[in-house]
Image (cartoon, rainbow, N blue to C red; front, side, top):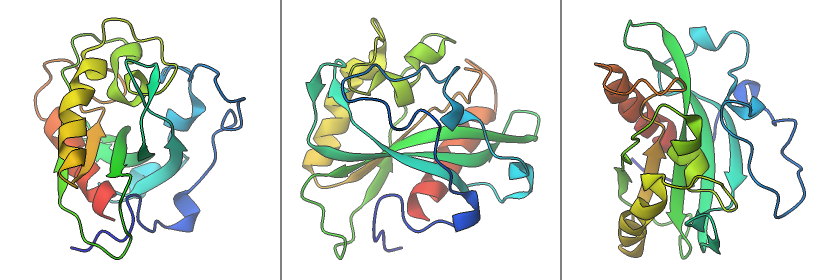
Length: 186
C-alpha cells in the first residue's frame, strides 16, 4: 500500500483542531489527560476501527530537550477496548526528514514500554519536545525509533494501552496497535 504522506488523506468530517493548538513556541505540551485533542468527537463510535478522527503536527525532543529533525504527526483514531467497545487513542507517526511523498516507505509500529498508568508516560506525551516526563522509558526508547527512521522507515508509536493506561489488559493493546497501523496507512 502506498503511503503518500504520513497522515495520509482523512475524511474532512473527522478532522478538528484542539483549542490549545496555537500555544506559544517552547511551552510544555498539555498532558493527555487534560488535552482536548485526546477527546474523540461525538459519533466516533460509528466509525470503523482505524479511522482517523483528528490529526496534528507535533515537535519531538530526545529526552524532551533536544529537537529532532523528523516530521511527527499525531493521529487520534477509533479502536476497540478490551470489552469490544469503541475507544479512541493516539499514535505518533514519525516520517524520516528526507521523506519524499512520491516514495513508498516501509511502515513499522513500535510499542514503547509504558511502566505506569499515568498519561505523563504515554509516548504521545513523553516523546514531545519540552515534555516533563522524567523517568518515562519512551524518552530513552526514542533511540530505537531513530534507528528505524535512519533506515528510511515510517514509524507509528501508539499509546497502545489506550487513554486509560490499561497496563496488562488483554486484547486492548493489540487492537490499539493494529488500528494505529490502519490509521497510519490511511
